[in-house]
Length: 244
Image: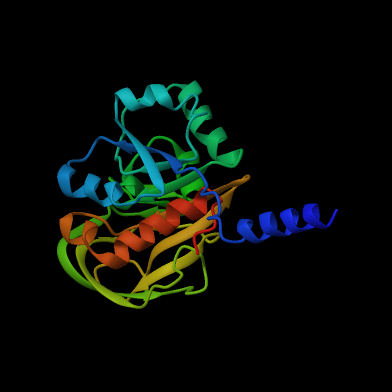
């Protein structure tokens, strides 16, 4: 009996030194299409994220995956697709988020799916490619401005998506004139005169989590350490993973 107790104690002691089992990588569906970008620099951003495994698909072929995304945890939208989608593809996209999937939408994704209002209600924002009436207000065409120097402040430094970030400066493209839903939770702000004030936010959609980040036009943004951290933490948060 004494020897058995010693063996049990030894096993318990050994267990305290064994490394904890690591969770599997987040499985991400990365969508592009409808807008050009520096592919080498953009994909390098995700290649450096060891806890995230992404699968890239571009529209129009990517539309075939939207009806069912059982093998993914998160959709990363970097597309500006305004081509047709079937009802099944639209329903699949929305249901994936409603049922607990994640969505991280970046930069020009805000201007995609112009003829699909529910997408923008889910996203919490909308960029206008033409003058139109939306949510009871008339909006002009949005104004993009390249090569701007933005001072970015952290609207909620305690949120998991922005945890550890300090105010930073970044060279990027600004958007002016987009709609932001009143039900979003602001994450980043800027006082740049050619930009809207809120430039990143999060919200829920059913059981799912949604993050939009307006930053991310080109290599200067992709390579910025604050941007890389922000995108990574957004993916982990929308995947319901602890990202401490």
